[in-house]
Image 1 (cartoon, rainbow, N blue to C red):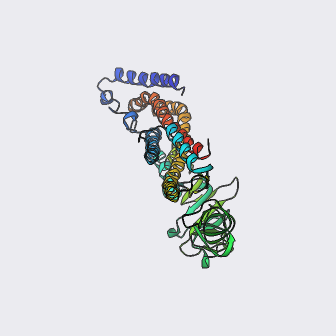
Image 2: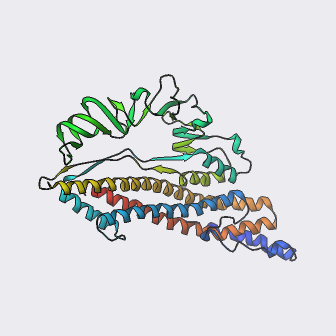
Image 3: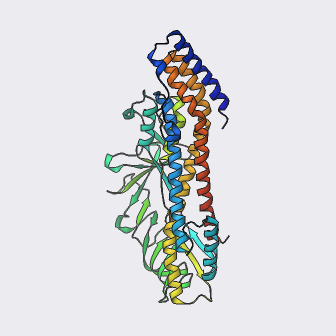
Length: 422
């Protein structure tokens, strides 16, 4: 991050004003003021007392914390997977990948087949509004709105609705269990039907995974009698026992259903709930844009996806107990891998936030220079010159957090490669 030259230039300006003021008025109380004993490296963002500047430093501090939080989550899942494989808890991602490849090779043909929808990451509109108000005192939180380029989940308790530019999508219990859309969960088949997922029952065709009693517990290459654990976003020809996502003809959802507002392509819609997509914060001072966007991304919540894992047994891996043990292990692994995917998705958002903060650090320098000039007073010079000493720490914190997050994303990639047979 090339900000050292800018740092030196504004430091000279701040110290010049400070020196001039103290020479002209050596008894001024301001001359005895110093910078905070702790800076952003110690987690303190209250450097200047100027909201727009300190909001930037607060975003830097939160980035460092968010990076460590995501890394800790990934490390915890990796440790659990390593222990389940009989490895030391501190095994590296490469060692875990090698052991996974070995385990799969002993029991199945062609590796695991894993299907899932991408993890869903949402940002609460209130986060962006609050961050904007903290940075820009002229913004009234109760009078501004956030726009969402994607899908906004509306808080039903607030009796909110979608604006005219968005499409209403409902998610909840299907009316009479008949889902005219995509069903998530289990589909109770009324007879022998195609199963777009895992067939639990009788498969009139080839089944990829069979239980100890001979029943199907995998992908059915034919028709299934029983229940079907659907793939994400699949249709259900029977009764949807999970949640149904559908577009109501009259634009009204069933009571208790989750209401989502889908913006049209390349457009955005007003959102006062949680946004699954790009958040467009309220208008504020230009110097607030980077910190507000970063706060929104860093506080995003990513939900682990629903995974379907299928495989074909090796012909010489026929022991019923061994198969049952492998299936039980897969069930535990499925939850941990889903959590890793969610953590990886959040890591990418936090990385984007860090990149935005890094770019904004250079733009912050002329903003501080303008603020000192506009204030034209010694106290402002002292406070803002304190910020200059923190500028170089910004680069160090972002580089540290970025390194940690990049390592976590790489680790998740190692696990994914093992599942793909690599």
